[in-house]
Image (cartoon, rainbow, N blue to C red; front, top):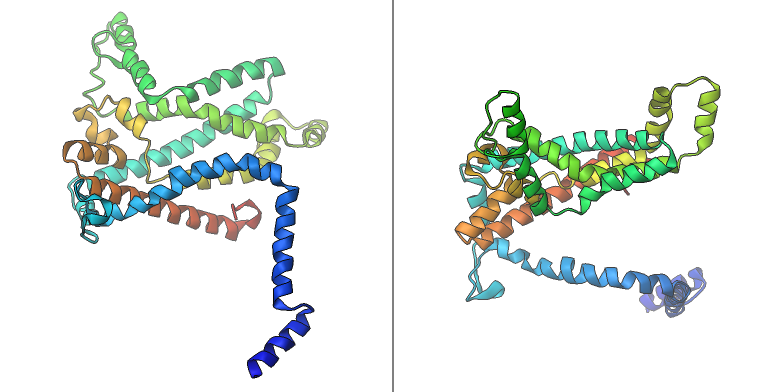
Length: 328
């Protein structure tokens, strides 16, 4: 009796009975859907794509906790708990591949962000017709596969008839066995990654610069500001939100290396593993040579969890400093 009285009192205070409020909410959402049905239909292919290729395959995460056997299937294989993770972290190369993955991604983020921002600022200073040419030239490598880029790198680095060694010989210098000397490869990988990726990031920053109100620059010119002063006092500060968002997204992939870059560019040379090997290439070789699917799944799960933690942490730090620049 008391419950009925309380429910009646709450309904009276709210101005409408619970069923009416529920119908009102459903009606409001249906009205919103009808008004924006074209946008919902346009987003439907993307939703279906994500559902099929991103969410349904997440069922396979349980392989990371099983001793997977093809004849038993995913659900029939034996549970082994955290044994697959223990196998990954107790190997002799665990520290090396983790160190390489983190350091390479840090270098890619720092060098790539700096170069893309610089190129975007420079493109904003040239004439429109030349700007289109440079945009196209910078963006084209983005569409090349790492297999093709690997052949291009091989044409430069081949010991017998590579372009670099032929140039060295023309100056009377000895050729270098690039695929057997691990020392220069951190610089080679950073350079190749920058050449292929910088165009995409440059266009993102360039689009942000175009959106800046030109009145800021006109006022700065009247005050006698130089191009460098306008870049550091106007362009970069106003681009800070975009830069931070790009950094947060990049930090999320800190433990997920670029497999194509680190596998095809060094040509999978065993002499270079100490300098070029990362988590992804190591797991691929373990899967190919040993056939340990469970360990590969455990590694992917570990990378995803760490990436999520890094994104949440970076976003929280940014939100504490400046809430307007955070992702959420």
